[in-house]
Image (cartoon, rainbow, N blue to C red; front, side):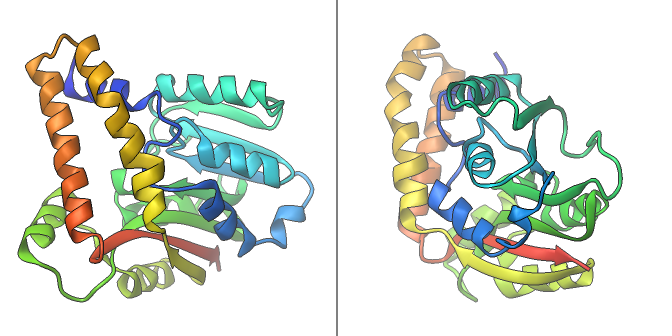
Length: 250
């Protein structure tokens, strides 16, 4: 298996493939609560993973959710959960790249993306996805964000290497304004979204994951990288977080 396939295998059993919670999804949704009462609402959840936010959106809005992810393993889990909860008519899964979305201009009332826009980059994402949002429709994304103006060298260099677009919330909001959005709200995720909902469940899967892959060097490397990411979060969590940005297309 490739490193990417191993990474997907490690995370496919997880409820979430990144930090977050249903509480935070609904907190963001509440900032645009007037539109969620609209009949025939259309929402795209881009980079949905196994669909925890998708399920929350389907349970708390009218209309239809189009859930897009590159990996069938995640979408298969979303389909199973949607059927179990009686939401299969409200959720349509689409396997594909977020950079080649099969949608028409002005098709959606809301584009949603939790912890995934970094894959194509924040500015590129908000620019390209804007085309698919209806006039006065909304964008809601969570994005890696500096929470202080200065940081220790280790974490500064780490994230500048891993994700050069990491920046402060004020600069992210400027990018939204520059690219045709009016900011509606912003907040950061609590520590529980990282530790309880993402890192601890990931740690619990390490042993079975290594056994499944016969403790191969590649599998051990994946686990080592995950452990190092967790270490950096615990040590430097006061300096960075996911920021949730909610904005309206203008």
